[in-house]
Length: 202
Image (cartoon, rainbow, N blue to C red; front, side, top):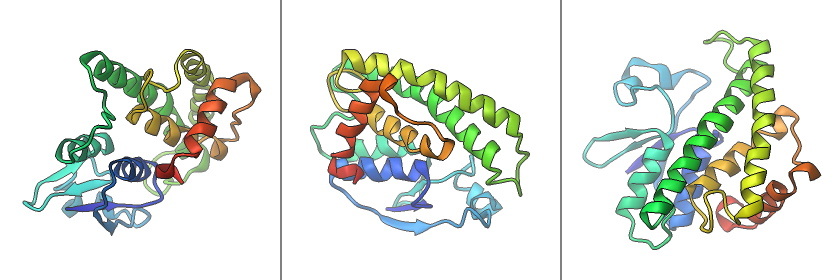
């Protein structure tokens, strides 16, 4: 297998952390996203969304979307971590928090960063006002995580899961957007400190 990626991107980092939790590694191929290599016709024949990372299997099959890649790696790697949940209830709770995090956290964070920074202004229309609005939506979402973590040690409940990995990646955007985990988010701050001690994120 080969993982086609740009190692510094949040989505690639999510897969990296997941692989470290599983104790596996995969050959990696760097994709030049600044040169829009991922938007080439040849690349998009393999990854229809034109995004990285993309997992290339030995039989020539390609899997895009970081969570889908994580699901595949989890399924083919014998382990008892249950990073997508163990019981039917845990699986539903992990999926629930994954979707909450994606739609209310990660997407606004992406939109804020891309529109405020203009990082991809050479290939997309950047609207600073939309970036600022997205930043406000992200700030308004953080207390939701703090409330959840006031009742449970981990994002999806009593067990560490991929939802915690996604939340960690989300928190990586905060400093880029001048957002601080202050004392009003004490539970999220405690969780963040706990996460920072995991070997998989160091």
